[in-house]
Image (cartoon, rainbow, N blue to C red; front, side):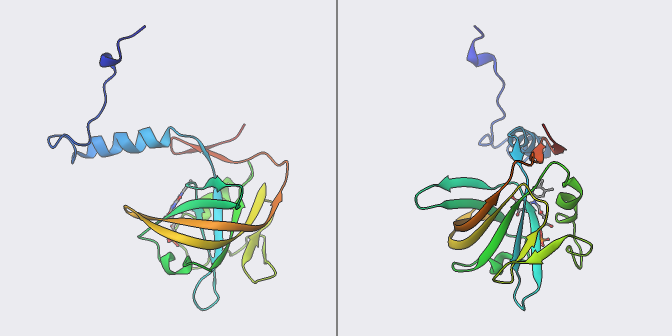
Length: 175
Ligand SMILES: Cc1cc2nc3c(=O)[nH]c(=O)nc-3n(C[C@H](O)[C@H](O)[C@H](O)COP(=O)(O)O)c2cc1C
């Protein structure tokens, strides 16, 4: 068995190396080594406009009560759309929806242009052909460094057998 001392670890608390771009990039690579699914969170922005963004920080949190979480960058113009009590849909993407994931991660005047979507009973957009959908209400938000952590209750859901879209080391994949 290899001596664990021989595994090289980048030290983020070492003042000589912590600020180096190479160390920051390696951390990004290390975090990206955790494979995830891909979702698009859709909501109503102030004024009632449809809004949405690609999100892979989604995680299930609790079954009883039914809670999920995801993280939103503080750089997003949508931070004010996810206060406690606000509704959103978490659309879990299927293997053929890579284009949609890219579209909802790029700056755009209207990300919904030419996208198959319709309003749910509360007017919040639902994307069609997804592998699953969670209808959610924000419970609480917490500070999380350069993101906010959004904890939400699942109030309705839909699941299918459609295979998921995956994200790993900066690339979309399927299985
Ligand atoms: C695969 C993938 C996953 C992403 N996950 C997140 C995420 O979890 N949280 C987040 O804030 N941004 C995430 N992003 C980036 C946002 O989709 C992107 O910054 C988007 O432009 C934000 O929307 P906004 O410009 O309307 O604020 C992800 C992008 C991609 C391609």
